[in-house]
Length: 173
Image (cartoon, rainbow, N blue to C red; front, side, top):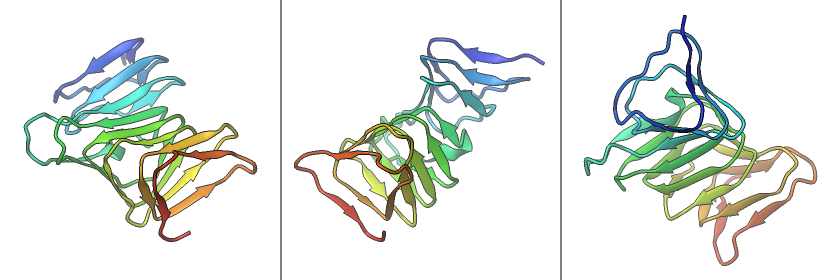
């Protein structure tokens, strides 16, 4: 069976499907760019790789499920070309780096674990019954007004830095 590798740069599928006979790996410094409706062999993301969602650019509201592609990524970016697009997180998702979302709506109904930074650039984050957990020992910065259902830190002494002049709300614990 053959393998598929994104060594460096960006693999943009632009709505096309990708099936690998073996392991599909997004190597360090590689980016897998998806609209969100593609069928893709489940990728493995290496240390500095990125999963980027952009939507299909048709101007209509579409719903995509992020966890259809992976439940563990390094960096996750949602930057939709359609502001009405919805990106769902339906299974526990482990982001071993930064989670950034700029356009569209992110719906979460499960556990979202983040090792790095949280950046909400004027996107709606529908917290549902989710828990956002920050792990690892490094400092995590949370920017962009956000409301969390549950917010936790699993590493004793882990610093969280909140953006100045922004509002952060935790509705449960």
